[in-house]
Image (cartoon, rainbow, N blue to C red):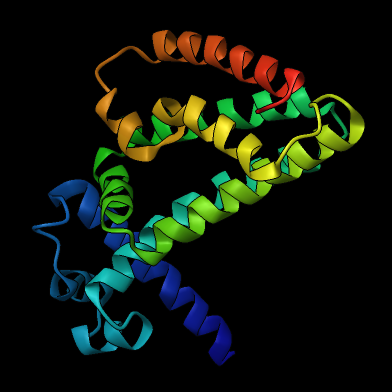
Length: 201
């Protein structure tokens, strides 16, 4: 029962923290205010999250988790590798852009973590790279992509897609209509896939 209560308290604190950040922004959000609304002391909040930064990173990790699950499921699908790579890249762009539009303050936590090189951002990038790497390995093994150095192939994907899958770049393009950006990205993905089919040098 104690474990269930702990999990429930964690979830409640995260929910309240996210709501405070949505309403007030990160600068005006305090652990004291979150604790007050949760009906506990701020010292008790620190039992679950050792610092405000840890709490903020947990809020970010919470909304990134389904994004990571989604791209993992795409990489696991039985589709051809080129189709999966296109689906994964578009899913990543759409998830970031949707969060930027729906929750700009929460998205801002993510871009701040990326700029500062914090652990939550590094882990997310590593997970994205892992799923893309799996698809590239599958494509090279099955003939959809020409055999080449795996790191060069991964670099080709990230260099080509950077504007559309780098969280900071997605935020900078927020004023450009989503449909327009998606159309651009689809054209870029076709070029990436041609490069992979031809083989990287």
